[in-house]
Length: 190
Image 1 (cartoon, rainbow, N blue to C red):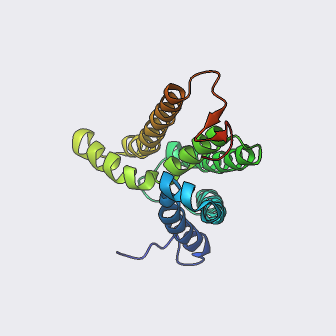
Image 2 (tube, rainbow, N blue to C red):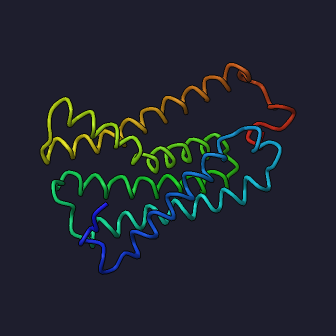
């Protein structure tokens, strides 16, 4: 891969972004495994703190890269705005997830963390949306900006579907009036 002249002078933001994204993606994946959460709650909390820190590093470095580095050739103002919006949305989702767990609102915590994870993993989806868009409609600044944005939108749509599916499943298992889930009071970790 050829060197990117935009990043050779001061690559700290890029290093933070890559290391943070790797930790966020790898450790974050384990946070969604119910068996690990139930059997190892202390590990879930410690790993969750790492995921939050890594996610905030990813969002912060994304803002840094977007605001202070020259845009890559072939990208336009729309992608610049989308990067700002989704970096802020990722950080906000993480902070709302922290706030929810401090209130012991497990459902809201789970939903906000799923949203943050979906935003954080969009780079993988963008490889597909950009490739498909280029094959179907060709290249061009606006087309590729829209294709990149589609990666975030696709991931968030899947996340919202998963959040609603989990909520429906929980409602069916525990109809109104239920005060316990697996023997624990509603709202307590399961």
